[in-house]
Structures are given as structure tokens and as C-alpha cells.
Image 1 (cartoon, rainbow, N blue to C red):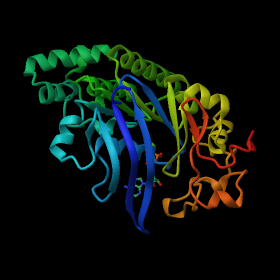
Image 2: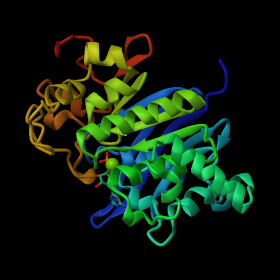
Image 3: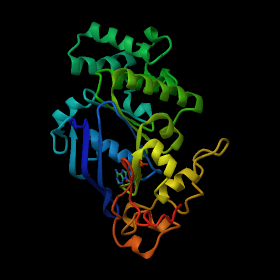
Length: 326
Ligand code: ADP
Ligand code: MG
């Protein structure tokens, strides 16, 4: 097999919290091939954003990281900030949930889209501005030529999200990470923006890591998915196979709790009792055992091994072989 674009092995992140050090990511293993689309799903607090930030080397300074993150064979953990800075934007780019976290309110958007082109591609001022315009047109920012000189606050949320996509694309990264890229937008805009991301990813043969708490978004946009809970990957596999089988009780719970049309946004997932525990309060053994209807004493003994459910499809649940959760 060819070298994966991204290869993550035993990734662990420990954070400093008011109550002491807490393990937020507890040994993630996954990889991505060039051009592959992978979804990362889980409730709020499951570790999705920390995973994305770890890949970009953007964790808080107090975080302890161990394991391995290789991008096209190159180890990123322990890489110095200068090298990481070169990679960000150039080889890996990120689209955040809230565009204002990525856009600088003090700079005109043309300047902000042109900046990575000058930095990473060495384009001169005029060439970078022309390319910025081309990118803004590609993301269907209406009236792009005039908007080059606008400030972020002069744009709507959807327009700002388009600008951020243009910035992320500027240098043609091999891996695009999108962390809940449409959560702040209304439903119709969400669809438009996701379709735009999918189109551009396919056209440029980029790999996409799409982070979402929304099963519908994952179902429609990625080939393969990881289900994250309590800093563990509890299920992983081809999207279709995972949805067909819902092997892990947590995945099943997420599916049962998916918002129906008309349900209030942000309503609690009533199909899964309880909520994601604080990191320090996660039970020993299977992280989901406290909320799982199928849990038995043995579930608390240790982290379950990953069982092969089907081709490329694995789930960490000791009750799987018994088929109890069917
Ligand atoms: P998600 O993106 O899946 O909602 P996060 O990756 O943001 O979740 O967070 C995972 C866990 O780590 C949560 O319990 C969150 O409270 C905790 N956490 C995130 N960032 C920090 C931080 N800087 N300091 C302490 N705890 C944090
Ligand atoms: Mg998040």
C-alpha cells in the first residue's frame, strides 16, 4: 500500500484543568489516504476539536501530547513552530466553525486571502491579489471584485465562511480539516457550503477531515467515519457500513437521537441518558459504560478491544460478539 497522507498512532492529549491533569484523547489510531474523505462524529465534548487542533499543532501550550502524527511520512509531533507554520496553510488547512476566529477583523479580506499566497507561494502583491479574486469567485462570493476591499464585519456569516474556504484553499493543501464548518449557518446555507466544500475537495483531489456532531452531514459527505466518545474511537468504518449496522451502542444512540425535522436545535439527545461526563469523571473501562443500556460489570474492567465488524469496520464493545445490542 502507498504511504498514507495522514497516519495517526496512539495519539494522546492530556490537558491541565482546574481539577488537575485530564486525558482528553486516549490513544487514537486512524489514517487517511490522499483524496479520501473522513468524518469525525461525536457529541459535544467528545474530543473532536482537540483532534483537529492536534493535527494542526494548535493545542493549548499546556497540553501534553504523545504518540505519532505523520503527514506524508513526516512526524508532526515535536516539530518546531516554524516548520509547523510552514505546513499550516500549505499542506494542511483548516476551516473553523466560526469564521471570525480565523479572520482578522482589522484587515480587508482580499489581503487576508492573498497573505498565504505571498507567504507560502512567494507570489508578488499583484499576482496574489489576482489569485485571491479568482479564489473568491471560485467559492461563489457574490460581487467578489468589490468585496476584495471589504472588512470581515461588512460580510454576512455565509459570506465570511466562503472567504475562509478561499483562504484554506489558497495554497492547495493536501488535507483540509473542517471543524463544524456550517453549524453557525441556517440550514439552506449549510447545504450550499457543504456542497461547495465537497465540489472543491473532489476537483483538487484534497483529503477532507470533516468534523460534525450531525449524522446527516456525515452521511452525505464522507466515505468513511470515526465515532468519538470520551477521547476514544468507539467505532470506525465505511460510512454506509456504519449506518447499516450501528454496531456500537453509542453510535446507535446517536442515530436514535438524530434531530428530526422541526426539533429544536441543541435539544438534548433523549435517546442517550445522561451527558458526556467531564474528562476526569469518565468511568474506567469502556468510556460509555455509565450511559449504556447494555453495560455489564465486565465493561468497566478495561477498554474493550476493537472487534472487526466487517471489512474495514471496527467497534470497541465487548458485547458485540454476543450480538446483544441488535
Ligand atoms: P468537541 O469538539 O468534540 O465538542 P473538544 O475537543 O472541544 O470537544 O473537547 C473535548 C474535551 O476536552 C471536553 O471535555 C472539553 O471540556 C475539554 N477541553 C477542551 N479544551 C480544553 C482546554 N483548553 N482546557 C481544558 N479542557 C479542555
Ligand atoms: Mg468542537
